[in-house]
Amino acid sequence: MRGFVCALALLAIGASALESSNNWKQSHFLAPEQSVRVHLAIRHEEAQMDTFRTFLGEVSDPSHANYGAYATTDGLKDMLAPPASRVDAVMAWVKTHVNVDAQMKVNKYQDYLTVVMSAAKANALFDAKMAYWKATSGPAHHHVRSVGSHRIPVELAAHVEYVAGLSEPFPTLQNKPAVSRGDERVGKAAGAPSQPCLYEPGPTPDCLFDAYGIDATASAGTKATMAVVEFAGSYYLESDLAEFQTRYGVEKDSVSDVQGIIPSSADAGTEASLDIQYIMGIAQGVPATYIQIPSTTATPFLDWAMAQLELDANDIAQVQSVSWGTAEYEYEDEVGVDRLNVELMKLGALGVSIVVATGDDGAGCHASSYMPNFPATSPYVTAVGGVWIPPITSTYKIEGDSISGGGFATSKGNNRTQASWQEDQVSSYQAACGVKDSKYVAEGRGIPDVAAFSAYYNYYRNGGASQVDGTSAAAPVWAGIIALINDQRLEAGKSTMGFLNPWLYSLDGTDAFTDITSGTNNDGGCLHTGYPAMEGWDAVTGLGTPMFPELLAAAMDA
Image (tube, rainbow, N blue to C red; front, side, top):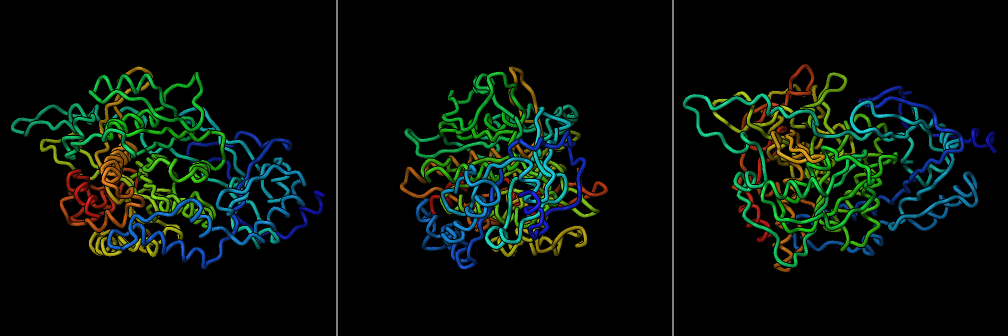
């Protein structure tokens, strides 16, 4: 059997062999009998995808008559399910080449077949070299992926366009869990204005309420829901959440639902603690779900999206905040980006808003060009950048944060043809920003979409008060704002906000945003350079920071 498998014609996917990447290093190869789980992405018909894109565009466009008329899970399945013959052919291939009794499952939308096989079988069928990788910093956890490229047998490639679980990127924490840059803050300079709370003592829920005009809590019996999504062994502790709520006068509440497992011996992680404390601190009274994706999975982002989509639409948290990602170049196959985008599109079509931090690498750098993070660059999420008051200041002026992830997507799947709602803003910025076009892909989708404060955040972790910086703090703030808007829309008999970007860009130039016009995201950019913040949309702060009353009024009129 092995000799036959090796003789199959193969299509190359992936890149050359790896020994280390970012904060990960290869540990050892998987034993032949160890299990490997792969997701076989079954091809859609192009006509199906055209119909689906049109549908998502209509229900997300506040000027369209179908705005907010989201799909049901059954309706979405009818729209997207590939031909049954294609699914049958993939299942038959698995039974023939893996095992007649192979452990496999077709997802609700009939476009993924998940299969468990031995590492020996995965290596032979897909010409892979499956290995364990260990994180060299942060929580102790591992990642499983092939050393180098994998290949898809030609007869399978007729029906399957991507095999997830073989060469997936490494999940990367988006914030900087080290000591906050707040340690560099200076005292009040002679003649300077009063220090704003964003600068000293740093953001708290009340401070953010004042900064963004947030004057609402959830209505009694609210129908709104929200969630944070965590990866790579970053957990929260309910005791830290309670301490945070007591210290900062936040309405006492517990997480309403935990999807996944938090070990009884777990320490609190920076990311998870920050996310849950601030989404619940902003949207007080809105039920919060904590989604924990196991650190052992090789497909963390896809697992999250697919698990949500197996739920009934009414059971999916309506706003989900994600503060994780990885540089786009780490996706060795464009189709991997495309297929994750389809899952994100499905969530939008069901009325779910996905809010993603852009990361803390500024403009980023790879091969002498700027490099943004994915999934923030997906055209189907709302990407949140950061602003700050620099620690050495006499004016306390808010400007674009030097670490704010921003720029232009490099993947074809994230081309701006899928983001027509920002075409005018991005084209104008590229013409005026003064950045050499050799540094970026001009056709790429631009990020961030919006921004919020991203420095000196006060939070609790493992029983102690601390501070931290990062766009990963800004993302749950925006998610909380959208949850409060959903609460009032649902109370009025309207739909959730769903995919946000067409609505957000329709408000460009209005009082719904505070335009941030100075600052450069040069911390992490090539040769310590980056993009400048400017009047209007820019690749540091997007459309700007939120003004809740105006956003709420616009949403209630939509």
